[in-house]
Length: 424
Ligand code: NIG
Ligand code: FE
Image 1: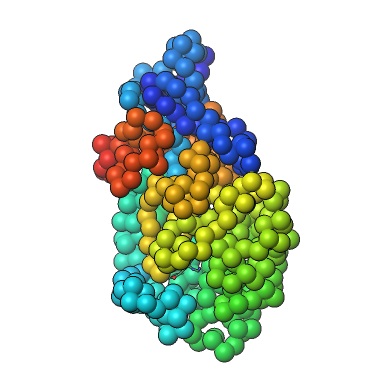
Image 2: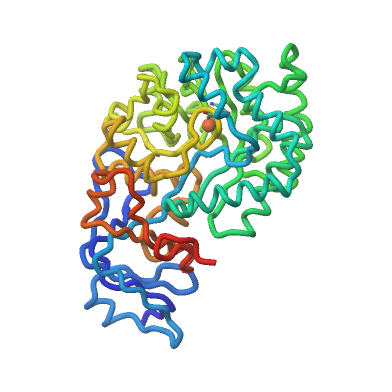
């Protein structure tokens, strides 16, 4: 007999994303659909997924078990936003309006706007205030179905303020339900103090900040912005090798504005993921295909920067790359909170099928964070992280735009969103 303390009955369609983890090629077209599904959990872990008949034959409910009737609702795994820059202060609405007036993102960066503005604001804000701002952002992400996110530092760019960002993330992990996977991204930009002396900043990262942050267990991943105007290929390699030596898992932002070959380097170094890829070369695509490095595509960036340049999702999927989707939530190039919208952008702008986009926002995103055994699909043994949507079928996830159909969110077995509102 299987014991359960929570059960969701009669889910009209359950998208499980179960099976291979991660999924590639044709497997990405399988959403693991179960009609009229029953789901049971014990202590926040899924213990049963199947039909009513099997549930009744095999599952016994504890005395205080919670029963949720999901008739007429579509269920899916909680979304995993595997690339965000959550802990920053301020906004860049003014810069946004300048872009609308014709300036490009890179021109504004050259004028000292861009990331630099956010670095100043993030350095200036006290930690408790930053934490409260991030708490509100996390609530919005949760209402939009994210139950796990990755979050990068990288707007402090000095010891004190990088630590501040990462400590804020640690506190937030205790204060609210969304799981946070922390990434140290001291290599997001060259700080103004080191503009003409990259090597001293790299030395500071390698010899002081990277070891200290690793030793204090404040970050699991290390990420580098590999672009000719930020960290070039040699600098990226130097930082990446040190990251691996210290025990970080590796992510690289690259081939975003200029095809620099960062993808090839990422695969060569065994990075867990390589991110952006608007300008990935055929050689980069070839290298990624069949590798264990996931490609995290961020369609919100092309949308938000209003560029026709898109990541070649179709080519990447068709040649066997592990493709995930994420928001890149940040104030400059993607001020985007909703994974549902990311899924829709994957379909509408990257020409992914709905099933591919679903797998890219769940199980493949979990893989990109090394959480494929914990989250990203509805299967016994995994964390009970579920979204229930008021939709006629899962196809409507991309077919209906501009509304939030997410009524219920369950995180580790607890109902955290009810009737579309955060449950206090
Ligand atoms: O991932 N590409 C680098 N960093 C961010 C943008 C940061 C910003 O503009 O503040 C990104 O898009
Ligand atoms: Fe980013």
